[in-house]
Every structure is written in structure tokens, then in C-alpha cells.
Length: 295
Ligand SMILES: Cc1cc2nc3c(=O)[nH]c(=O)nc-3n(C[C@H](O)[C@H](O)[C@H](O)COP(=O)(O)OP(=O)(O)OC[C@H]3O[C@@H](n4cnc5c(N)ncnc54)[C@H](O)[C@@H]3O)c2cc1C
Image (cartoon, rainbow, N blue to C red; front, side, top):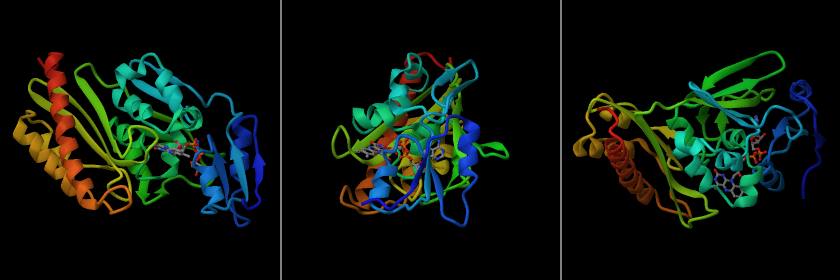
């Protein structure tokens, strides 16, 4: 059922990066973290690595650190780790909500944040909140490491900026300010363990009565999870009136290019982008008003 491959289980980062540096003409060498996507892909033979490099035993890659400026997650941090963190739900409720609605308990315990991003799926649930939180990813190879905006990481359907010899060692985002809010809605055919039909994440901050840093990210409605930048611009620097929110929601709908599949039609997905974007923006405005933000 599986094609043959070698399995490396390096004990440290240097050895993991050295193993990945052997990528070349003899065939691909790929990282494996929780394996929840990789095993499915191996069985379907949609990937045929010459070798897998497990990062399970690489120390220092798992955990969440929060300081005044940033939230940092190691490259092997699991979805369950997001749910267990005592502070993260206050700071990034959108990310924790996406983790709560993610798969079932067993998958959440092994599936990693970096694996979700590096799978490149337009339905990857952690990606819309991370995009809306202005996340950055750090990639390391034997020769160098580099950080780039998550928004620049995705290039097309399952096409990413990661080179074969690179490992995603960290995912981080700026700590949202006190007068900011972020939220996520996953629409699926069941409440648990279901692939997303439409995912919408929203983040914004208010100053006076004007919205700033408006972010709207949409999942499962295009070849990649995307930022609806036209919709964001509709609200940026403006009061969040019902009319502007409606205009932003319409602009979000116009930004998507969904497909028909067994879960939903393209028309239904577009309609839900409109409705859910309007709902999350309206709730964000109400929450910030309740908290007296911007006053
Ligand atoms: C039953 C089931 C339910 C699921 N439900 C959901 C769901 O609700 N929402 C959702 O979004 N996904 C879901 N998934 C998909 C999957 O669980 C997630 O995408 C998960 O986050 C992948 O993480 P992983 O650690 O298992 O990655 P792996 O399977 O180990 O790897 C996935 C890909 O990422 C690469 N990779 C992994 N780690 C790194 C790294 N540190 N650096 C560079 N490349 C890396 C691998 O080479 C591979 O190409 C589900 C899967 C299953 C089997």
C-alpha cells in the first residue's frame, strides 16, 4: 500500500536540516510532523518521498511563548497545545476557535500548526485566523533562516514559498492591542470533524470611531486562503457603519472564486462569504463598543 521510503528521526535541529539538505535528483525528502496529512497522502500515493524526516524528537520546536510584543509558536506546536494555553484564548480567540472546531481529539493531539500551513490546503482551518492576525513564518535550512509574511507564503494551489531543504521552525504574530478584536467562523456540514465549506476570519482595531488594521481572510473559497484586501480597504480608517460593513461584505464576496464540490455549490459558498463577513464585522463592532474601545 505504501511505496518504500526511508525514515529519519533526527535528535536535533542540525541533524534534521542536514537530512533535508540531501534533497535532490535522487527524489524528494520531506518533513513529517503529526503525519495526519502525510499518511493520507502516502496511502493515496499523491506524494512519493525517497525519505521522510520526522521532527518528533527535535527539541525546542514545541510550545507557545507570549510577551508584550508577539505570540510565538514553535514549528511542532500542536492544535491541542493551542487549546490548552491559558492566555491564548484571550489574545487570539479566532485562532483558538479554529483549533476548537478542528478535526477530532486524536487528530488535534498530533496535528501541528506548521503542518497545517505547509499542507497548503485552501481549507486549512488555522490559516484564515493566522492571516488575519498578520502572522509571519520562519523557515530554516542548513545555510540560513528567513522570516516572511504568511500572506506572501502561498503562491497558488498547494504551492508555497518553502524550499525542499527548509523546515518551518516558528509561526508568530504581533500581540493584538487592547482596543482590537479577532474572530473566526467555520461553516461545515457537521459541527465536528468536518472539512470547511467556508471559513471567515476577521480582525480589526478601533481608534475614536474609525476602524484600523482591518483584516478579512477567507478559507475554502479560492485556490489559496486569501485576504480580501478590497473589502479591508472599504473599512480602513472609516467608522464601521452598517452601510460600510455591508459594502465590505459584498467586496469580500466579489474577491472569491469558489468551486462546486460534494460539500457545497460555488454560489452557496459566495453567498455565505457575504453573510458571514457581514456577521463577523457587525459582531466585532458591537464587541468593541461594549468594551469602550476607541473612546
Ligand atoms: C481525520 C482528519 C481530520 C482532519 N480535520 C481537519 C480540520 O478540521 N481542519 C484542518 O485544517 N485540517 C484537518 N485535517 C488535516 C490535517 O490534520 C492538518 O492539516 C494538520 O494540521 C497537518 O499537520 P501535521 O503535523 O499532521 O502535518 P503532516 O501530515 O506531518 O505534514 C503535512 C505537510 O506539511 C509538511 N510539514 C509538516 N511540518 C512541517 C514543518 N515544520 N516544516 C515544513 N514542512 C512541514 C509535510 O512535509 C507535509 O507536506 C484533518 C486530517 C484528518 C486525517
